Length: 332
Image (cartoon, rainbow, N blue to C red):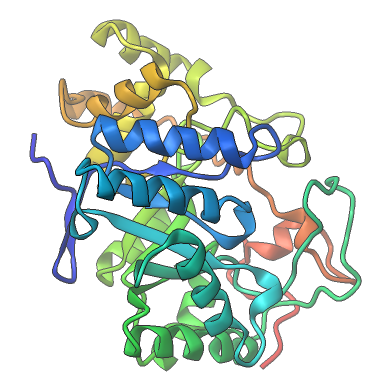
């Protein structure tokens, strides 16, 4: 199996990265320790974000690894993201500068708008909490923040630009306006939630999908849990394939994601899992028949519903995701 996933610009990306969002379970020290293990295991792609509250600790790990010759900076692909409360004039640039300072880097390889609106929640908030200042999506607000990401690429602070938690209607609204088009897009992707329409839309436009929650995020925050949620590693189709390969069902999810053409970013603090996750996408590939079986097993089960970002007057979390093909509550 090829050791690279795809080419983004002039960068050869690996088939898998490691996330650094510890949800509400792990602290900054746990996450940075996991990054240190991952670097020594051979990971070279790291998905970070300002809101995760651990970029300063991760920066120390990067510096130590580079200083000790574990890896070179040019062999790493580091992603960071601007949080929703920093979309205002000049704030996106201040956010990336803070992330670069915390990470100890002169540039990040990709910088993302974490969510497509300036709605935010307090750390550790409950699923029923709402910010009274939240607003629906606005093309104008989005593009004002995006122009700053474009400037960050102009200034060499980021090599590529990225979007996250988007929908096709939102992409249709903003892509024609972008001077610097997104090279990557993060979206929830796992066997129970495959988003084929959005996935294919992005691939057709040369935008590389990055899949979060690739094994269904069993450790996601309590606010993101709901009755009826599917557990990917318990899906009969996944279990059957795992038994055939003699591996844990989680590794089947990662193989499927990488072979489909996404870039999965699982998170773990356990060294055996970190090592197994990396190895899984480079060995013993799934058969075409197994890939088709997983493709047919889609349950359309979104786990990260995002209801904490809803604005006054929104009907429910569905309004965030434009399920009927229109942007709910949209303003210019």
